[in-house]
Image (tube, rainbow, N blue to C red; front, side, top):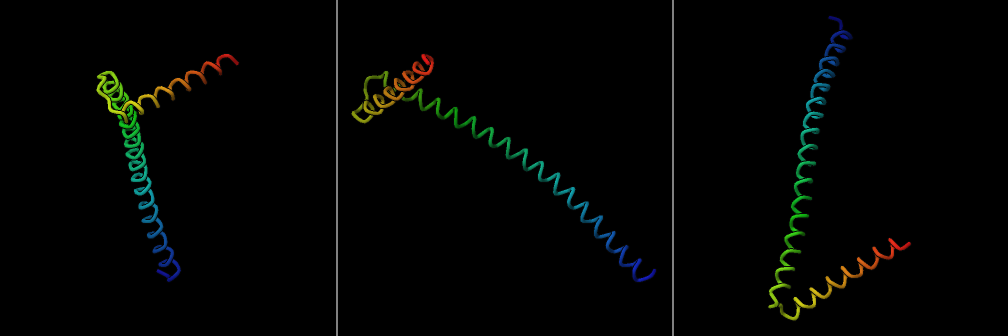
Amino acid sequence: MTPVADHIARLSSKLSKLIRNYRALEKEHEKVKAELERRMSAEEELRSRHAALEQQLALLNASSGETDEQGRRELERKLSHYIREIDRCIALLGD
């Protein structure tokens, strides 16, 4: 083989190897991307479940009647927040 043909053959070999590696990395990237989306979805579900459980706990503590001063203030703060949100929604509906 001539030096030019030999050089082209080596370049072709390296290029095909590079393409194979690129395709393998693309597949791995897609797998990692899918795993990330799955985990983010699971995390969001856990966050919403946590928020719901926190709300249930607050309601249970409020309904037991045995709240301390801090718990009572927190309950009043949350109730005030809910009332402001309801008033805001009513105002938006009235427009």
